[in-house]
Length: 315
Image 1 (cartoon, rainbow, N blue to C red):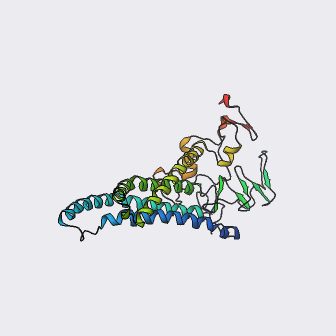
Image 2 (image 1 turned 180 degrees about the vertical axis):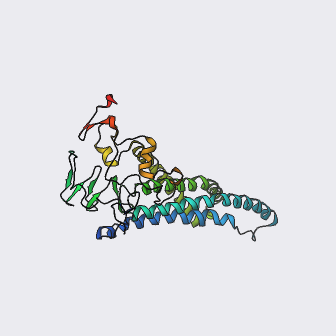
Image 3 (image 1 turned 135 degrees about the vertical axis):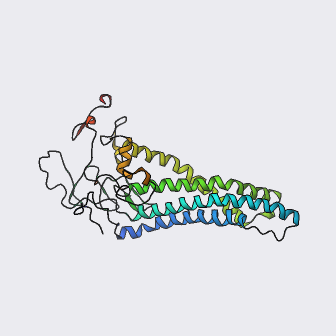
Protein backbone atom coordinates (compact mmCIF):
# COMPACT_ATOMS: atom_id res chain seq x y z
CA UNK A 1 0.00 0.00 0.00
CA UNK A 2 1.58 3.23 -1.14
CA UNK A 3 1.42 6.52 0.64
CA UNK A 4 -0.28 9.50 -0.99
CA UNK A 5 2.63 11.64 0.17
CA UNK A 6 5.94 12.04 -1.59
CA UNK A 7 8.19 9.03 -1.42
CA UNK A 8 11.58 9.57 0.19
CA UNK A 9 14.17 10.24 -2.46
CA UNK A 10 11.67 10.09 -5.29
CA UNK A 11 11.46 12.75 -7.96
CA UNK A 12 7.67 12.69 -8.09
CA UNK A 13 4.78 11.79 -5.78
CA UNK A 14 4.33 8.12 -5.02
CA UNK A 15 1.93 6.07 -7.08
CA UNK A 16 -1.48 6.03 -5.42
CA UNK A 17 -2.58 3.03 -3.42
CA UNK A 18 -5.11 0.37 -4.27
CA UNK A 19 -8.60 1.27 -3.13
CA UNK A 20 -9.44 -0.61 0.09
CA UNK A 21 -12.60 -2.70 0.29
CA UNK A 22 -15.27 -1.21 2.52
CA UNK A 23 -18.86 -2.26 3.18
CA UNK A 24 -20.06 0.24 0.58
CA UNK A 25 -17.56 -1.10 -1.95
CA UNK A 26 -18.73 -4.67 -1.42
CA UNK A 27 -22.41 -3.74 -1.85
CA UNK A 28 -21.54 -1.73 -4.97
CA UNK A 29 -20.01 -4.77 -6.69
CA UNK A 30 -23.48 -5.64 -8.03
CA UNK A 31 -23.10 -2.83 -10.55
CA UNK A 32 -19.76 -4.25 -11.65
CA UNK A 33 -21.32 -7.71 -12.09
CA UNK A 34 -23.92 -6.19 -14.42
CA UNK A 35 -21.18 -4.47 -16.41
CA UNK A 36 -19.17 -7.70 -16.68
CA UNK A 37 -22.24 -9.66 -17.78
CA UNK A 38 -22.90 -7.19 -20.61
CA UNK A 39 -19.24 -7.10 -21.65
CA UNK A 40 -18.80 -10.87 -21.77
CA UNK A 41 -22.18 -11.41 -23.44
CA UNK A 42 -21.12 -9.19 -26.35
CA UNK A 43 -17.68 -10.81 -26.42
CA UNK A 44 -18.97 -14.39 -26.36
CA UNK A 45 -21.61 -13.90 -29.04
CA UNK A 46 -19.28 -11.93 -31.31
CA UNK A 47 -16.45 -14.46 -31.12
CA UNK A 48 -18.25 -17.79 -30.76
CA UNK A 49 -21.45 -17.14 -32.73
CA UNK A 50 -20.48 -14.55 -35.34
CA UNK A 51 -16.95 -15.60 -36.23
CA UNK A 52 -16.01 -19.16 -35.28
CA UNK A 53 -18.85 -20.82 -37.26
CA UNK A 54 -17.61 -19.05 -40.40
CA UNK A 55 -13.99 -19.96 -39.77
CA UNK A 56 -14.81 -23.65 -39.30
CA UNK A 57 -17.98 -24.38 -41.31
CA UNK A 58 -19.50 -27.86 -41.61
CA UNK A 59 -19.12 -28.65 -45.33
CA UNK A 60 -19.39 -32.44 -45.23
CA UNK A 61 -23.18 -32.38 -45.67
CA UNK A 62 -22.97 -30.22 -48.83
CA UNK A 63 -22.65 -31.41 -52.43
CA UNK A 64 -19.41 -30.86 -54.36
CA UNK A 65 -20.48 -27.57 -56.00
CA UNK A 66 -21.68 -26.11 -52.71
CA UNK A 67 -18.49 -27.33 -51.04
CA UNK A 68 -16.40 -25.43 -53.61
CA UNK A 69 -18.41 -22.24 -53.06
CA UNK A 70 -18.18 -22.69 -49.29
CA UNK A 71 -14.40 -23.09 -49.56
CA UNK A 72 -14.15 -19.68 -51.25
CA UNK A 73 -16.31 -18.08 -48.54
CA UNK A 74 -14.30 -19.78 -45.81
CA UNK A 75 -11.05 -18.44 -47.27
CA UNK A 76 -12.44 -14.89 -47.24
CA UNK A 77 -13.73 -15.23 -43.67
CA UNK A 78 -10.41 -16.63 -42.46
CA UNK A 79 -8.46 -13.72 -43.93
CA UNK A 80 -10.93 -11.32 -42.35
CA UNK A 81 -10.67 -13.16 -39.06
CA UNK A 82 -6.87 -12.95 -39.10
CA UNK A 83 -7.17 -9.16 -39.37
CA UNK A 84 -10.20 -8.43 -37.22
CA UNK A 85 -10.03 -10.85 -34.28
CA UNK A 86 -6.54 -9.76 -33.10
CA UNK A 87 -7.63 -6.11 -33.23
CA UNK A 88 -10.79 -6.89 -31.30
CA UNK A 89 -8.95 -8.93 -28.68
CA UNK A 90 -6.42 -6.14 -28.22
CA UNK A 91 -9.10 -3.50 -27.60
CA UNK A 92 -11.04 -5.95 -25.43
CA UNK A 93 -8.02 -6.81 -23.28
CA UNK A 94 -7.21 -3.10 -22.87
CA UNK A 95 -10.85 -2.54 -21.92
CA UNK A 96 -10.61 -5.12 -19.15
CA UNK A 97 -7.30 -3.71 -17.91
CA UNK A 98 -8.67 -0.15 -17.84
CA UNK A 99 -11.82 -1.36 -16.06
CA UNK A 100 -9.76 -3.14 -13.41
CA UNK A 101 -7.54 -0.10 -12.87
CA UNK A 102 -10.52 2.22 -12.72
CA UNK A 103 -12.18 0.05 -10.08
CA UNK A 104 -9.16 -0.75 -7.95
CA UNK A 105 -7.09 2.46 -8.09
CA UNK A 106 -7.71 4.87 -5.25
CA UNK A 107 -8.78 8.19 -6.83
CA UNK A 108 -6.75 10.17 -4.31
CA UNK A 109 -6.60 10.82 -0.57
CA UNK A 110 -5.91 14.18 1.01
CA UNK A 111 -2.29 13.90 2.24
CA UNK A 112 -1.96 13.61 6.05
CA UNK A 113 -1.73 16.96 7.83
CA UNK A 114 -2.19 18.82 4.56
CA UNK A 115 -3.09 22.51 5.06
CA UNK A 116 -2.16 22.83 8.71
CA UNK A 117 1.01 24.75 7.86
CA UNK A 118 0.14 27.70 5.62
CA UNK A 119 3.45 29.53 5.73
CA UNK A 120 3.17 32.94 4.09
CA UNK A 121 0.04 32.01 2.12
CA UNK A 122 -3.07 34.05 2.83
CA UNK A 123 -5.56 32.24 0.60
CA UNK A 124 -8.66 30.69 2.07
CA UNK A 125 -8.73 27.02 2.97
CA UNK A 126 -11.81 24.84 2.81
CA UNK A 127 -12.44 22.45 5.67
CA UNK A 128 -14.39 19.19 5.54
CA UNK A 129 -16.25 18.66 8.79
CA UNK A 130 -17.05 15.05 7.91
CA UNK A 131 -13.46 13.99 7.23
CA UNK A 132 -11.88 16.57 9.57
CA UNK A 133 -9.31 17.57 6.95
CA UNK A 134 -8.44 20.73 5.06
CA UNK A 135 -9.49 20.34 1.44
CA UNK A 136 -7.02 21.21 -1.35
CA UNK A 137 -8.29 22.97 -4.45
CA UNK A 138 -10.57 20.81 -6.62
CA UNK A 139 -11.11 18.33 -3.77
CA UNK A 140 -14.68 17.40 -2.85
CA UNK A 141 -16.37 15.12 -0.35
CA UNK A 142 -18.16 12.11 -1.83
CA UNK A 143 -21.20 11.14 0.23
CA UNK A 144 -21.20 7.62 -1.25
CA UNK A 145 -17.54 6.87 -0.58
CA UNK A 146 -17.79 8.91 2.66
CA UNK A 147 -14.44 10.61 2.17
CA UNK A 148 -12.77 13.48 0.34
CA UNK A 149 -11.47 12.83 -3.18
CA UNK A 150 -8.58 14.68 -4.83
CA UNK A 151 -9.67 16.36 -8.07
CA UNK A 152 -13.04 14.64 -7.88
CA UNK A 153 -14.80 14.40 -11.23
CA UNK A 154 -17.83 12.31 -10.24
CA UNK A 155 -18.82 9.09 -8.52
CA UNK A 156 -19.41 6.35 -11.08
CA UNK A 157 -21.57 3.45 -9.83
CA UNK A 158 -20.62 1.31 -12.85
CA UNK A 159 -17.02 1.11 -11.63
CA UNK A 160 -18.04 1.34 -7.97
CA UNK A 161 -15.52 4.11 -7.40
CA UNK A 162 -15.04 7.83 -7.60
CA UNK A 163 -13.25 9.20 -10.64
CA UNK A 164 -10.50 11.43 -9.32
CA UNK A 165 -6.89 12.47 -9.71
CA UNK A 166 -5.25 9.04 -9.88
CA UNK A 167 -7.83 7.09 -11.89
CA UNK A 168 -9.32 9.66 -14.26
CA UNK A 169 -6.85 8.48 -16.88
CA UNK A 170 -8.15 4.92 -16.55
CA UNK A 171 -11.75 6.13 -16.78
CA UNK A 172 -11.01 7.93 -20.05
CA UNK A 173 -9.16 4.88 -21.40
CA UNK A 174 -12.11 2.70 -20.42
CA UNK A 175 -14.44 4.89 -22.47
CA UNK A 176 -12.09 4.83 -25.47
CA UNK A 177 -11.57 1.05 -25.44
CA UNK A 178 -15.26 0.30 -24.90
CA UNK A 179 -16.09 2.53 -27.86
CA UNK A 180 -13.36 0.94 -30.00
CA UNK A 181 -14.51 -2.60 -29.17
CA UNK A 182 -18.14 -1.76 -29.91
CA UNK A 183 -17.14 -0.15 -33.20
CA UNK A 184 -15.32 -3.32 -34.27
CA UNK A 185 -18.35 -5.41 -33.32
CA UNK A 186 -20.80 -3.24 -35.24
CA UNK A 187 -18.73 -2.77 -38.39
CA UNK A 188 -17.69 -6.40 -38.76
CA UNK A 189 -21.09 -7.87 -37.89
CA UNK A 190 -22.75 -6.45 -41.02
CA UNK A 191 -21.74 -9.36 -43.34
CA UNK A 192 -22.77 -11.93 -40.73
CA UNK A 193 -26.14 -10.25 -40.22
CA UNK A 194 -26.66 -10.17 -43.99
CA UNK A 195 -25.99 -13.91 -44.36
CA UNK A 196 -28.25 -14.77 -41.43
CA UNK A 197 -31.00 -12.49 -42.71
CA UNK A 198 -30.81 -14.02 -46.19
CA UNK A 199 -31.07 -17.54 -44.78
CA UNK A 200 -34.03 -16.70 -42.52
CA UNK A 201 -35.84 -14.77 -45.27
CA UNK A 202 -35.95 -17.95 -47.37
CA UNK A 203 -37.84 -19.76 -44.64
CA UNK A 204 -38.54 -18.94 -41.02
CA UNK A 205 -37.79 -22.57 -40.21
CA UNK A 206 -34.13 -21.70 -40.82
CA UNK A 207 -34.12 -19.43 -37.76
CA UNK A 208 -31.69 -20.67 -35.11
CA UNK A 209 -31.12 -19.56 -31.54
CA UNK A 210 -27.70 -18.18 -32.53
CA UNK A 211 -29.47 -15.74 -34.88
CA UNK A 212 -31.44 -14.29 -31.98
CA UNK A 213 -28.30 -13.96 -29.85
CA UNK A 214 -26.40 -12.20 -32.63
CA UNK A 215 -29.25 -9.82 -33.38
CA UNK A 216 -29.61 -8.88 -29.71
CA UNK A 217 -25.84 -8.47 -29.41
CA UNK A 218 -25.71 -6.05 -32.34
CA UNK A 219 -28.71 -4.07 -31.07
CA UNK A 220 -27.12 -3.84 -27.60
CA UNK A 221 -23.78 -2.75 -29.09
CA UNK A 222 -25.55 -0.13 -31.23
CA UNK A 223 -27.45 1.24 -28.24
CA UNK A 224 -24.27 1.47 -26.16
CA UNK A 225 -22.37 3.14 -29.00
CA UNK A 226 -25.02 5.80 -29.50
CA UNK A 227 -25.15 6.42 -25.75
CA UNK A 228 -21.37 6.64 -25.38
CA UNK A 229 -20.76 8.95 -28.35
CA UNK A 230 -21.86 12.17 -26.67
CA UNK A 231 -20.60 10.97 -23.28
CA UNK A 232 -17.06 10.53 -24.62
CA UNK A 233 -17.19 13.87 -26.43
CA UNK A 234 -18.30 15.53 -23.19
CA UNK A 235 -15.44 14.08 -21.14
CA UNK A 236 -12.85 14.82 -23.83
CA UNK A 237 -14.05 18.43 -23.78
CA UNK A 238 -13.70 18.53 -20.00
CA UNK A 239 -10.12 17.26 -20.14
CA UNK A 240 -9.25 19.66 -22.97
CA UNK A 241 -10.61 22.64 -21.00
CA UNK A 242 -9.28 21.36 -17.65
CA UNK A 243 -12.66 21.08 -15.99
CA UNK A 244 -14.12 18.31 -13.88
CA UNK A 245 -17.78 17.33 -14.10
CA UNK A 246 -18.44 19.07 -10.76
CA UNK A 247 -16.67 22.26 -11.88
CA UNK A 248 -18.55 22.19 -15.17
CA UNK A 249 -21.87 22.11 -13.31
CA UNK A 250 -20.84 25.05 -11.15
CA UNK A 251 -19.28 27.30 -13.79
CA UNK A 252 -20.95 30.24 -15.46
CA UNK A 253 -21.56 30.12 -19.18
CA UNK A 254 -18.58 31.27 -21.24
CA UNK A 255 -16.14 31.30 -18.33
CA UNK A 256 -12.92 29.38 -18.86
CA UNK A 257 -11.21 27.33 -16.19
CA UNK A 258 -8.48 29.10 -14.24
CA UNK A 259 -6.64 25.76 -14.33
CA UNK A 260 -6.60 25.75 -18.15
CA UNK A 261 -2.86 25.84 -19.00
CA UNK A 262 -3.11 24.82 -22.65
CA UNK A 263 -4.51 21.82 -24.52
CA UNK A 264 -1.44 19.58 -24.36
CA UNK A 265 -0.62 20.33 -20.73
CA UNK A 266 -4.24 19.81 -19.74
CA UNK A 267 -4.12 16.30 -21.20
CA UNK A 268 -0.71 15.68 -19.63
CA UNK A 269 -2.19 16.41 -16.20
CA UNK A 270 -4.45 13.39 -16.73
CA UNK A 271 -2.41 11.04 -18.95
CA UNK A 272 1.22 11.94 -18.26
CA UNK A 273 3.99 13.61 -20.24
CA UNK A 274 4.76 10.72 -22.62
CA UNK A 275 2.14 10.78 -25.38
CA UNK A 276 3.31 7.40 -26.70
CA UNK A 277 2.28 5.78 -23.41
CA UNK A 278 -1.21 7.28 -23.19
CA UNK A 279 -2.75 4.05 -24.51
CA UNK A 280 -1.36 1.94 -21.66
CA UNK A 281 -3.77 1.39 -18.71
CA UNK A 282 -1.15 1.61 -16.00
CA UNK A 283 0.93 4.31 -14.30
CA UNK A 284 4.60 4.63 -15.20
CA UNK A 285 6.93 7.53 -14.31
CA UNK A 286 6.21 9.11 -17.72
CA UNK A 287 2.53 8.20 -18.01
CA UNK A 288 1.17 9.10 -14.59
CA UNK A 289 -0.89 12.22 -13.83
CA UNK A 290 1.27 15.32 -13.63
CA UNK A 291 1.31 16.83 -10.14
CA UNK A 292 0.15 15.56 -6.79
CA UNK A 293 -3.56 16.36 -6.90
CA UNK A 294 -3.21 18.91 -4.09
CA UNK A 295 -1.50 21.85 -5.76
CA UNK A 296 -2.50 23.16 -9.16
CA UNK A 297 -1.01 25.50 -11.72
CA UNK A 298 -3.34 28.31 -12.75
CA UNK A 299 -3.46 30.60 -15.78
CA UNK A 300 -2.15 33.90 -14.45
CA UNK A 301 -4.33 36.00 -16.77
CA UNK A 302 -7.49 34.36 -15.48
CA UNK A 303 -6.98 34.85 -11.78
CA UNK A 304 -6.91 38.17 -9.92
CA UNK A 305 -6.82 36.54 -6.49
CA UNK A 306 -7.93 33.27 -4.96
CA UNK A 307 -11.65 34.04 -5.14
CA UNK A 308 -12.05 36.40 -8.09
CA UNK A 309 -11.78 35.69 -11.81
CA UNK A 310 -11.56 38.17 -14.65
CA UNK A 311 -14.75 38.53 -16.74
CA UNK A 312 -14.75 36.55 -20.00
CA UNK A 313 -14.21 39.64 -22.18
CA UNK A 314 -10.92 40.41 -20.47
CA UNK A 315 -9.07 37.29 -21.62
